[in-house]
Length: 187
Image (tube, rainbow, N blue to C red):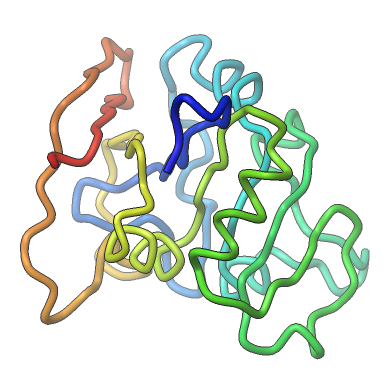
């Protein structure tokens, strides 16, 4: 999908609890507060990300109805186009910088890569990422393994009936607390 065409990678990027959750109940992300990440990792992601593809449930969970806005990634350090894949764009609240797409995930990835301007398209959200994995659209998988157990919430990869998806280790971080891992699909 990417490479010699001068386009960025499709990067599935997330932080996960030890028990396999990427968000708490109701897509809550407050459990990440106070975690110590590898120095420079946020800056690296901000610099290499050109666009984001996310799911509707995550968007809705982060939407502030009173302020009429949604939280920006990386604590507001990143600013760029965010595409939200949804079956119901007509009932999405307007949010600056967010575009709602009602299309196939492959078309959404192409749209995001075009908008990324040669940098990476980051994929956020369990369902959108699952669809991308099932169709072979992910170039790399970057996971920050956090020393916390949530017990409930949004699972990393919930795909009954899908066979094993194998990954090849590209990098393991030397973090003070959160372990940074990066993989690519084993072809």
